[in-house]
Amino acid sequence: MRLKDCHNFRDFRRLAERRLPGPIFNYIDGAADDEGTLARNAASFSDVDLIPNVLRGKQDIDLSVTVMGQKLDLPVYCSPTALQRLFHHDGERATAAAAAKFGTMFGVSSLGTVSLEEVRRSHSNPQVYQFYFHKDRGLNRAMMERAKEAGVEVMMLTVDSITGGNRERDKRTGFSIPFRLNARGLAQFVMKPAWGINYVRHEKFSLPQLDYHIDMGGGTASISEYFSEMLDPTMTWDDVAEMVEFWGGQFCLKGVMAPEDAVRAADIGCTGIVISNHGGRQLDGSRSSFDQLDEIAQAAGDRLDVLLDSGVTRGSHVLKALSLGAKAVGLGRYYLFPLAAAGQPGVERALDLMRDELVRDMRLMGRDRIEELTRENLRFR
Image 1 (cartoon, rainbow, N blue to C red):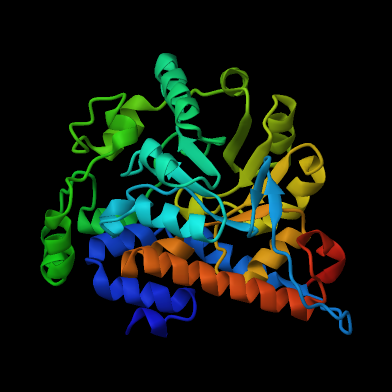
Image 2 (cartoon, rainbow, N blue to C red):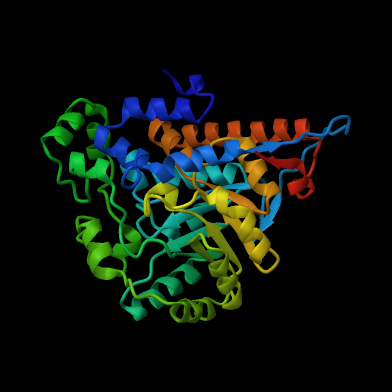
């Protein structure tokens, strides 16, 4: 199977599975506990149907949107995700370059493997910095100052990860950073030697966002220890309000699932929220993001920009989300599997397919601008 034979998310997933050692593939693919929320994320889009209009004479389709003050050529963006150079040696460099080519936003994670300064110097498209709340308040301010100096447009605080989810696939293989693989996990690396050869031929793996502020041992400190020892599970709305004021710009909360929390985010000055269950990787049994979208958009959508991620793999999913009030949609596994399979060309092919689907589906819907999508062109089963 080759990249040109990939025509949808499932194809990219299969190609990545062939190329990645099992523990790394399962780190991307897996979710918490019984993975029920992961399954529901995908299934939820099937409970709502699109109602197209005909004879509208639509030809030139404008997919552009403005989100938290950022003009995007597409209503989708590459969500910030951790450890990308584990999946492909170019990691965030490939993702940022592909997002720049398509004129959309991308995110760099605190657990990213390329520095936010490097990708900011290389590309001018809007950049998000996703970070976690630490017990050390001075560290939080230092990380925001660094992002300001780098020219990051949007600060995105993850609020659903005060502790790690129970990801049992990783436990079965012993996957962790640093690697502490059991015999089963090691055997799967032996079966995919090309990944290991690539890994040792390129620059040493590191976590530059954290290494800059914390002694992570060049990326060898345990990620699980970082979550358990460095992050503050007692974070409150007052803490976030102080950060919003300190940042003084576009500030977004990622991981909001309750309407009252969306309203509270608007009250303290946030300019955006991401409805997200972390791709099903945190609280299994949580509602899907799409199931919560309508209620949250009606509660707070006129006070801040509502974004959504988790489970999006098709252009029709994006149109349904936009119709219910999302301003843009974040992609996660949708671009991570093509990244793992083929680097930057893989991410570019995935975004190209998504753009084609969006243009085609907009024509079939009888719409030529994103703002023409409303809940009137949906029906709930």
